[in-house]
Image: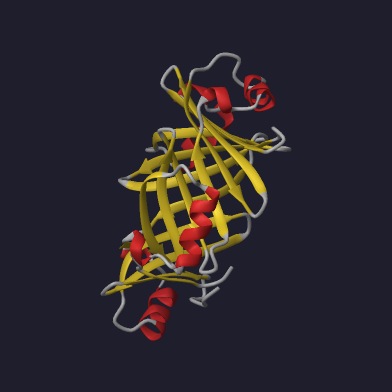
Length: 260
């Protein structure tokens, strides 16, 4: 893991007349029928929102006019039959809520979402219809009993907020979001079930002294805005969010207070 530094940056609205000619020309060549076009400058790239035939589109272009990424809303009639076949292998009946097509670096990804009996279902599939990820919202009574027992044994006062079953090729993971004594806890279990990862909120008073000392030394003037303890197998780390004015810094420490 590495230290993650993120200074708060904001997208800057720009008028189309201020978009460089090469970028505007490349955009208009690719999307000749674009309407309601809005441009922004976002982290050095040109971000544009627009509509074609009443469907939302988004695109990112570099400073040479190359399209880095393109996302577009889809109607159900535009979704290939093999994509729908993969989805129906998991959910026989559904009414489509949202569908998007994403193109990036020559790859095509489909995002399909819908709700069944008040529960969200989200699919991510590649351009050939192969399942990449399927997230299924679960009711409490759909969480495997062994997982509920494991959490209850460790945290008797646990209050479950929501849960998901996450399927990827060759893997099934159960995610549970819960509260324990007014602090958020997140759990990831496999289908055995073994606890894969546990992330919990920390009060500042619960942050190890070694980490506090490192923050004072390495980030003078920064305030602690959020702290999490993350256990993943034998690895224990502390994820700390620090802020000073408009600058935000997210740092990962080990138990000895060393930056990872």
